[in-house]
Image (cartoon, rainbow, N blue to C red; front, side, top):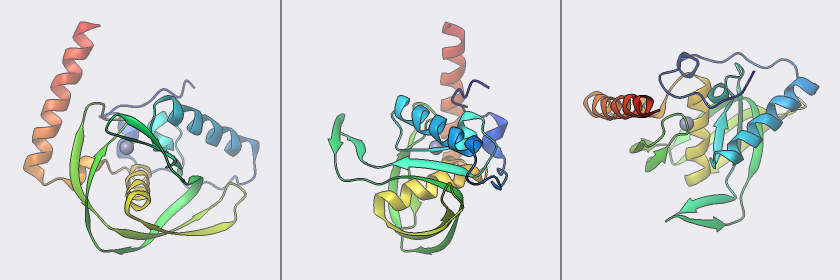
Amino acid sequence: MSYEIRLWPDKILKQKMKEVDFFGTDKLKEYINIMFDRMYQLEGVGLAANQIGIPYQIIVLDTSVKEEDGQEQEKEGIKMALINPVIVEKEGEIESTEGCLSFPGVQITIPRAKKVVVKAKDPEGKEIEINAEDFLSVVLQHEIDHINGIPFINHLPPVKRRMVLEKYMKKRKELAKSK
Ligand SMILES: [Zn+2]
């Protein structure tokens, strides 16, 4: 497996991933290592397993380096790998401007919950609960959507979504032709 980044409309991005039941194994550790490597290479703050073709409910994120105005900004961040994560509570609403490694060139503003509570397992199978707000909350919502087969464009109203998709597909075709 090459673990190349999967771009929309790859069908693995539309599917709900399988739950992990192989905690504490080398296989799980390897998947997580590969996911972090790819995420840093691609300069993302989060990555879902299906974005590189791994068909399980795994997400990784690292909010310590966030690009703002083209400048890398170091701040105290959170780095974690979450297995089988589920959002159990949502509160409030914020406008969130997001990009996605699986939709190069697309940036959209969508509503997200301001706060979420997420239940998940760590790589050893221990239960964890995370209370997140603002940026971390948004990253969690974006990545957990991915492992459930929901792309961020689904949070746009249908007409806007169609416009964004048409523009994106046109650009993808042009890029494919120029190669
Ligand atoms: Zn994404």
